[in-house]
Length: 397
Image (cartoon, rainbow, N blue to C red; front, top):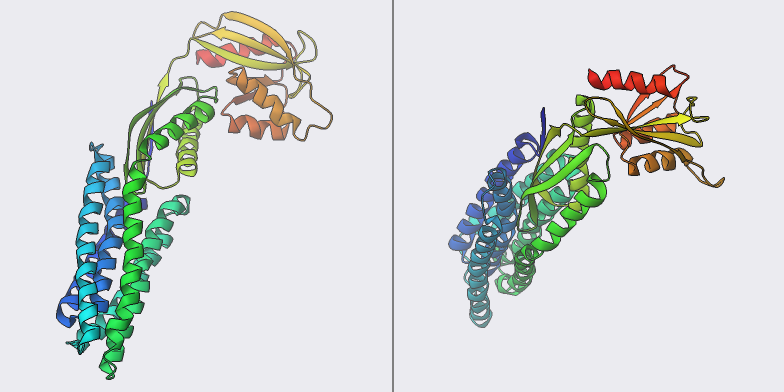
C-alpha cells in the first residue's frame, strides 16, 4: 500500500499560472508606457515591475520544475534574478541620467493618453492578482501566498507614484515628472534590494536541509508507527522551497491511520519550513519484526482502564504473535500534573507502543493516542492473557 500527499495543481499550480499571466500583461503595459511616453517615472516603474516579476517566476519554476525533480533549480533561480536585476539596474541608471537632463532642460513627456492610462490599468490588474494570490491559495500555504501578494502589491505602490509626474505634466507643470520620478526610482531600488535578497536566500539551502532533518528526527521518527523518513529531493527557488519526502510506516496500521500520518507530515513540514511551493510525501508500508502493545493492569494479571498506575508492555513477534518480552512499568504522576493522560500516552510512545488494549480509556487519553497514531482497542476482558490473545488474532487478520 502506498499513500501520497502533495501540493496539488488546483491548490497552487493553477493559481500561479493565472498570476503569471496577469504579470505578463503588466510587464507589457509597463514597457509600452515607458517607451511611448519617455517619462522617467514610468521607466522607473517598468524597472520595478521587472524586479517584482522575479518572485512570481521563482514560484512558478519552483512548482513545475520541482514536481519533476529538475536538478539545480536554485541555480536557474539565481540566473533569472540576476538577469532581471541587471536589466532593471541598467534602466535605473539610464533613468537617473534622463531625470538629470529633464531637470536641467525642459521635460518632454509624450503620449499622455498612454502615460496616464497605463498606471491606472496596472493598479487594477495588480489588485486583482494580489487578491487571487491570497484568497485562492489555501490558508495552510499562507506564508507562500503572503510573499507572493506582498511582492505583487509593490507594483501598485510604484504605479501610484509613477502617475503623479505625468499628471502634473499634463496640466502644464512639466517639472513634476522628473521630480517625482526620483521617488519612483528610490522605490525601484528597494524592490531591487528585495530581489537580491532572494539570491542570498538560496545560500540558506543547507540550513533548510538541516531543519528538515531535525523535523524528521525529532517529530516524525518519535512516532512509533513511522519506521523511516528520507529526504529524496530538496531545492529552493528564490524564497520558495521544494521537497520530495519518502517514509515507511508499520504494515499493521489501518489505512485511515496511514492517511492521517500523511496529512500530519504535510501540515507539519509546511508549518516548520514556511514558504514551501511544492511538497510531495510518499508513504509506503513495511512489515515489522515485532509489535509492542500496552495493557493497563491493576496487578500483574488483571486488566484495568487506561490510564492506570501500572501498565504492562508486551512485545510480540510479528507475524507469529509469540511473546518476546513482558514488563510492568509505573505511570505515576505528580498530583499537580496538568494533563496526566497526555504524559501517560507520551511515555508509551517513547516505548514504541503501537497498540493500547484496555477495558476502557479516558477520552483525553484516546485523543492523545490518536495524535501519536497509537491504535486503541477496547476489550471486555479481565485477564491480560485474554487481551494478548485477542490482539494476536487481530494482527493475524
